[in-house]
Length: 385
Ligand code: XMP
Image: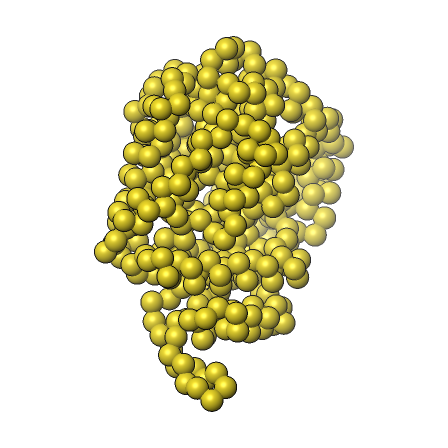
């Protein structure tokens, strides 16, 4: 059992049938009624989805009438009713949730939506272009694209502490976002890709309240100002990530965005240990692109939650042909998880790891060693910083 959830006390009439190290009452029974604690929803549970379906449909009598299409129809109607002829601001991070929210809201109200995408110079290879292409050429939204890379990198000069990096990035983001919102405004609504798990996790303000909006600091766009006076528009408040992905596909959001793995707001800054500079960002981007390409080419991305490269602030000795090299080390991190609260290091096939290693060392000038991180969370975290 994960997360420490366990039953402490038997209900009346029940007796214990099984236990495990972490769960004092793993199974219990009372005549023909048997209770068993396990995770039917996780990938490792064979027939888990069948078990859930059997319970909901055959036992509880629910009907399975949710579809992405019916959700989209209802959501478009709701958004039009709520927004009227108002204007909506959306912080586009390039992640799945804000991208699909932008596509949905754009379909509902067209140019009344203004997505703002801030390039903080800490994005992965190809990411800024993919988002711009999707939301200007494909969806033809009023995208406001701000390349604030220089400003972020300038502010990050000399900063090595991870939490300080987050703070600098968060504050710079707020300044840039506010300035753009002011230029393009006024707006009455702020749209967010909040999902059901976020709603459960944090009691954020209700979507109907017109109050100052409190947004979780770890929110993907990097933490928005706490005192902005907008009404919130959160069309995915009742959806899970896989449902948002299904909605995105029906709306025609490009697959590379719909399938995108979670990416932290501070971006590559927390994967480049120590001080950030352009040359190191370049090394990291190239190595990270190879990690992603190889894991995706092998189809392993379906089994892992996040996979990326980390550039370490150390050099190691190597040999290339007749020459000794003294160059940087990259750590590859790939983890399996359900919610990022706990994670297992991914048991990637050796061949995939081998290809990643030889490609990085051969193709990225300045890196001569690749190591694989085999630490789970806890005790390690997913990100290195
Ligand atoms: P950790 O490293 O805490 O990560 O095990 C758990 C999940 O959160 C992501 N993460 C962040 N996301 N801002 C974000 O938006 C952050 O500062 C941040 N730090 C970690 C991480 O990628 C993983 O999915």
